[in-house]
Length: 234
Image (cartoon, rainbow, N blue to C red; front, side, top):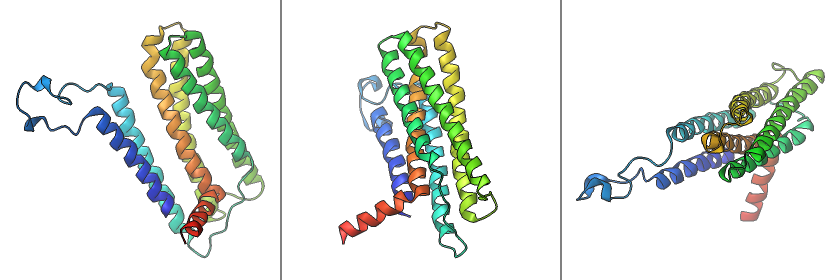
């Protein structure tokens, strides 16, 4: 289960880096003097919404890490049959990458107070996100038409569970993105929606990372990469 360990390590590294950045590890009780004179003893520089998002993403990452671990354990049984992954997943991956790129562009534009560019890039991100969800439904339809149903084989069940759970989180991201885009199109000042845009971008970047891990798992790329690493080390 090397990929599970790696995934958890990445999540812990992100959380640890954020903690160091916010100086939550400071020990003001060991210092002497006026409390405001020491680093890390004042109020947090990060808004509460971003703190909540960080906790939420850590929970999501742990959930998918456990799911990946269960996938590897169940795969070792004799009744496991490898599923034929629809080719449309490659196109879906590309659309999710474009969503992340569009939202990163919106984040850059909102920091420059270019509201028209923010509107265009948020809209583009929403369109690409919807295309990803549509592509995932197309993949499900292709599999069911070929006889790969939810209860046909454990591998089929895991495919629907993994992609469905990720899809639900993407739908949640689309709801937040739609709300942010609606505020931008209503003409609300860029500085007032900057936090929402930043949160949306961070969330979609994370969903992209999770999907790339899941995609490599479902297509066998993760196993091929592990085999290559073992060959290089021996």
